[in-house]
Image 1 (tube, rainbow, N blue to C red):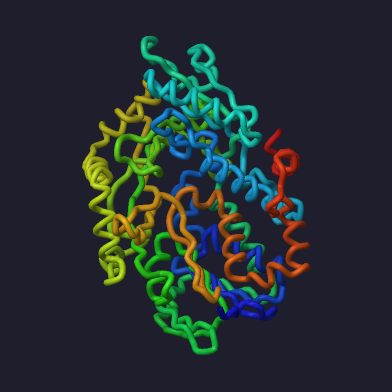
Image 2: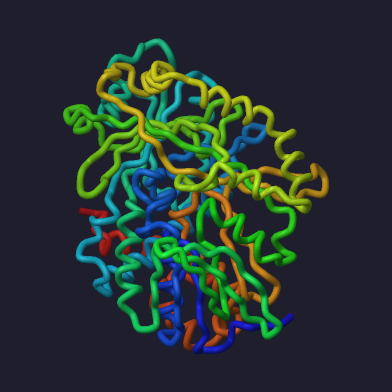
Length: 496
């Protein structure tokens, strides 16, 4: 296998100016200041698509409240494997962010991360039994130490007054609470990372520039063809390594690479909408992220939640997200994105995945055809006394769920993220959606591990990674993890 990423002075290309490219760019520049880096972004600003605060869930996805990360088996047992993996990945992100704060990349961590309790709320006997079993399973793990469970209405009223006020006292209800939950403004985080990155020597950020094609050269490099959208001029440039971190736009670009590892991948776009509260008094009464259970056939990204957010220093209250269908792969994309992504290698997986997910298709049709009173009715299941006039609809970001080949079913729809790398490590792409931004550091470390293995094993890189991210080693014990969590929380001012 040819290894091309061993040149200490090589050129790095990052496509898309979102949280993933920002994270990878900072990591690589910290590991080797001699790397030259060029970032291409088709829009006129960074973090304008999925990383923007109004376009993503904003939750520090630590699996504290997301019920879809803890499936229940037929025997009633709860599988916490995915929850632990995501919680660990988020601690990795916090560890890196704490390093950046200590290095004074940020004036104050409150600009991008704040403490917001995470709650899971359910009603009905079966759901209460599920939540109790989930609590019993998770609370045994150190990452979820401090989780509280309650079915007492008086206590729940203190935890989430908007959710409990006006609720009938007949139906069983329950909630879990983690006081160490967070809200993350990934838009602000991304902007600060790029501000620092572009101040480094050898780094170039090209806004309003769209990558149109990539061609592998015989010497292992890539010829990147791109267009200046302002002056309508086309250019070409050689590069040693390409990372495609363009959110929903990653799949079409990956297909243009023609690497074998990309064969059979497709994408299923799901659009999002929020109800946004415009009443200051209502916003002030709620201070939590209250997650529920997804409806039948609903994708995990559509898990309903009444969500306190801190956006540009102001408290906001959102409910949703509501799903819809669009053939766009990006919020600022083209309606031809989906049909243009269909090719001979992925048509069978895409048709097969569609056949096996008819419930999802029906769900999206229902969501796309609902009216405002339907959305208010869904809101009032979580906030019974909600005033319809205080809420208005806002369009969220576009997500593209991964479809890939499967020997048994032909094609499967994946609700997560997928890293696709060439065998020689010269190109990588990140596909998919949730938990996405929250696990950006873990995902980008995976890119480095797959694409820069020899450099990663060097004593210099190992020493630097331990300095940046002390949790980055396979032998981390639970005691070490909890110690670093406490240290990182203090640095990020999450204990104030």
